[in-house]
View 1: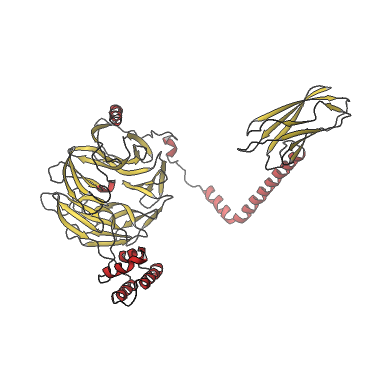
View 2: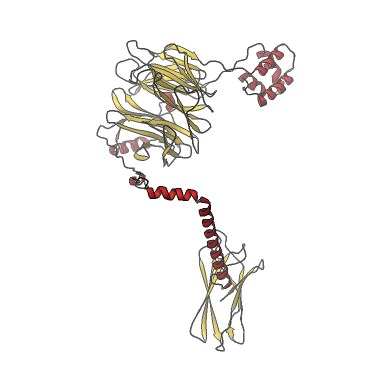
Length: 573
């Protein structure tokens, strides 16, 4: 109840209207498994969600209309992605829903199963095939089979099949039963789908026919024909893809931005079977969206980074918490585009470039974000939470977002590029002179640097010899000391200042002894212990009375002794 009241209080000053909040909707999904689509061609968009259920059961394809559940279909496996796309020009123009799950793509039309696409099988290792053939003919025992498969796994370029990997994981007493059960079946290597997207076929219109783009665990990207579901193009990546963003048209020009499991981002283009550009990140990407001609990446080290289409870094923004999900907020009617970033501190931040322009507080951690037309309302923000809740917010028509950054930090003017003047002839001549005399200039710089170091070392030695800044010679008791004599005579006041220079360790068991000519000076106590601890950055003052018997002057030496180690530091006052 407190979270609901908090949302109502925030709505008074927020730019969003709280349209619906259901904390027990039992929706467990991610941004890749949620979409908005006009499934019946009536101008009213529905919410399509691929629900993960418990992770092992209750996986369903759910469709929401307004605030209620409209229909649901059972899924056979965990969904990894969900998209809506137009697969033909037939009337009425109703989109289909493609759900990626395992090695299959299930296509639904009018909320009914329409087509099932299966990924092509992968090449089987020839040595593995030969070993299983020998096992089928009873030429080798299960123990020999296991040893041979282990050797193939360590050296072969083609990975082993799932059957062989499962066999290698078994205990010795279970291997014979496994071989008898599977040796007669053919070996197959099947990959799975990791991400899915859509690509316009030949027109950029919103209601144009789109191709399916899928990334697989075998480091491949496939582009499928929307009608025949044949493979139109195949591209390879250095690592399995995890997220992708697609723009352009297949028959003209397109770019596929892919975040991979090795922590890099690759950009694929038309007529190029391998990546055209590579973006190396300092940490793994957890979110990837495109804004116009720039790519925005949310990283695991709590940063948001912007890049150009060719991989040049534009900016970096630090986040207060780890990123959980990302989405694009696009309002064509207002000409406004921004990035929605869900954080682990129950907040959703709205960024335009590197500037934070709005913050939305949520009752739970957001796991998926979708912005677009829902029902007949254009500016609708739909979020699901970690606890299975559903949040629907509508952007107020009077809402205005400022371009200035609302987060504390340097001013916006600091990020404006300076108007650097053109290169003059004097600048060019100076550059040429530096190139021609680079060795001589470097030697002169090194000579000046050596002289500076020598002068600093001589000054330091002189200070030590004259006891201008007395320091302890023991690393276990780092002390800094000085002495000041006050008075006109014959009675003087000797003030000792002792300071511990260690960062976090006190110094104990100290004693102070004075050495002087007793015929010239007299002191009430020439040896005493320091009873307190010397703590870092705190100066301790000791006051001693000194009497002069004659007008002659002589040196008084005081020694600080560590009683336990007999380490001492000698200074002159």
